[in-house]
Length: 116
Length: 117
Image (cartoon, rainbow over all chains, first blue to last red):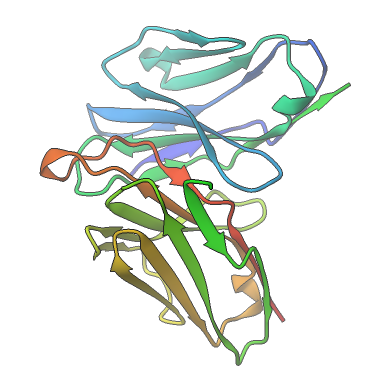
């Protein structure tokens, strides 16, 4: 069975602070994918990143960076110099690499509030 | 025009009503999904359609009935719901690659907020 744990239910930071959202996963698969999605107040989930289990290189995209550590089954997400527009619920997700239509197992999400 | 459009955005219904949620995707994807998002819970996958064929039904009660007439449209028919069915229902789509593989990125609509009285 697959499981994704986001232990932080809510985080509040002041604008321009850095913030890290934690994600720990469990899977018996040797090949899998990890994702982060952002859900702003409007409701839709916005895809941020996909990471293959074979690729442990960290990734940076603007103010966003991701730290994938297979040894600890973690895929943490850091926002540098946070902005008010970053306020949203962030979901970490895990999927199998095979299957006719991919299923995602989501964590319960972390509500991030960035205060001006 | 957004990639995945859901209507209605808000719906209030009594337990004896019959209503439907509609989802339309303009991305040329072949797979479509219904997810349920309840407060304080992870997203729950309900149904998956791949090339109009239902491939997953995650033990969803029969009062929820999906319909996928083509790869661009997905419906969720609702009948005799319970108050605990109140939630945000999210539709998503994804691209099917060769041999049915998926890229993994789901594209979501803004959801239909359902309240059952």
